[in-house]
Length: 408
Image 1: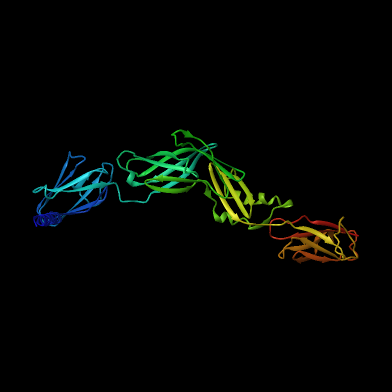
Image 2 (image 1 turned 45 degrees about the vertical axis):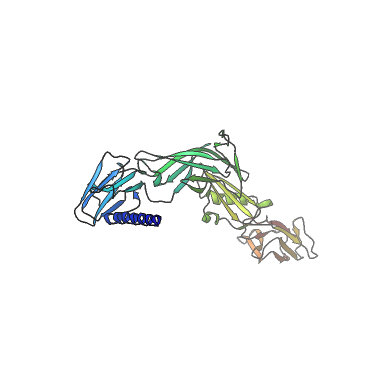
């Protein structure tokens, strides 16, 4: 019975203390640097504020009327004061400090403590660029994170990162760009090159035995090297190679020919890409398994893009006689009919027969043309000794060489 009475008295006592605190003072749970912090005092008294980590100065605020709100602002010497808060209510504090709030008449009864934080939880912003010249390149990290800005001096922010292989972890301390900026930067030397469809990256990382290692990381297309950064308890995956804009890739035709006499097509595509970068930029183009891979090295920065393409078979022009035999030698009989076929030609192509030379002030006249991949032609009497060009054209970048024939 006595035990039950004891617990009842204890609970009632705690309730009375908590109720007393809520009646005398009302204040938030957390203090943020540079943000207004209201304290409501519900009795006539003097509010005393003391930074327990720097107790040299005691702040006192007289309360003449119950329910008075005292707007305070906690800042470091390098911070801007809160807008609308009088100078006499500015309290010096650093992140991590403990602040004591008491009422002067009964300090022990009304004691409340609150911790100081740099800022509210904010999302980390991490940026990565490449800088440098020739073979010397640097990973340039920039992290914006106010909670890491703890003092009025430039602070440091440790990060970890690896490229493609988690076993090759490197560490770096970023330095704040100035007092109270919350922006941290740092560089790390790196080597990067591209050849034959592979990126090779070298950077110094720490092995499990704490020894430094500089072993290459090889990433083959279609994969691209990425940098994984760990900072502030979060992880970010950043592109080491920048993607080529889709609008640039869309300028390249989705269907074209490559084989044989069409080898110049890759140079044509390279020229399309080159026009969007510096004249000194190196452009690498290759086609594999229905994919066009484009890599650009412009200064120290690499760009890469992939596009689905269709490589069409090369077209070959042939001339067949009335029996279906292939005519060779470039001579046609004016009295016969021939069928001209564009092997692997397409329905939206066109076969043309052009008379070479000039007649009656007219040069290179088109005698006949037909949409598609074939045409029939009887040279007719009276055209003996004249030379003709047989041509196939379509829109797929590369057309076969013309056939030159003479009628006899």
